[in-house]
Amino acid sequence: MGALGLKIMLNYPEINPIALQIGPLAVRWYGLMYLIGISLGWALLHWRSRDPVYGFSKEAVSDLVFYAALGVVIGGRVGYIVFYDTAVIWQAPLTILKVWQGGMSFHGGLLGVIVACFLFCKRYHKPFMAVMDFIVPVVPIGLGFGRLGNFINEELWGRVTDVPWGMIFPTGGPFVRHPSQLYEFFLEGVVLFGVLWGYSSRKPPRMAVSALFLMGYGLARIFCEFFRMPDVQLGFIAFDWLTMGQLLSIPMVILGIILWVSAHRADKGLSSRSPVR
Image (cartoon, rainbow, N blue to C red):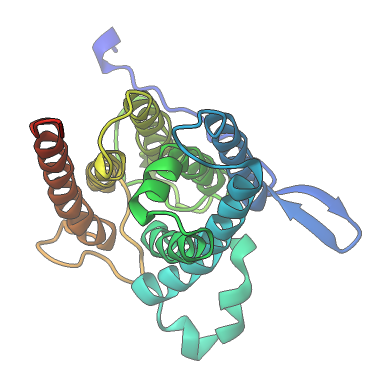
């Protein structure tokens, strides 16, 4: 067989989903990934708050992260049930509480964070979009570690492929599949973090950072979904290719474009005004 005919397959590094067990208490990697992501985000927000332009005290940052973490967990789990698995409400309602087994929706988590930030703003009397612009640059950190958690949990694997870096997942049958969790880790985590962190450091107009997050995540998710298996209980939503993840991400991109245009129009209007004399 010639060199061009060689096929290389990466071995899936089977990892025990339980990182630590003390008697009946089991600490799972999936939960640890969320904890690490939230902790790193908290640390970076503390570092950003040193710049007085943001107007956040250390106590306010800690409260904001607490609110956001609750929004992620509650919204993510409720969103998964509503968007992806409503049957479980009637078949096994207690499964809703088993967050450590996986089954979290980003879009539900996003809605949860929005509600949490709204409540935070009411308490601290801060502008909602200013708070969102402050927090969204660190969101990809949590997203990236969450995708690593999916990889360790052997869930949300990709479609069958013959690419050299394909893997056989123990839970995915005897087929070579795209490691789509790692694609999402790279685009939704590493790349999106770099883009947002770099852009936000330029002190752009209000709403622009949030708009860039919506567009960036939405486009990355839509792209990655072409390599990821649709949820078995849903399949394709339409056209034999549209997935629920893509359907939920399209409004994000549209809203991001609207906010982006509005932010720069408002900024242009402010900069073009004559100074008051």
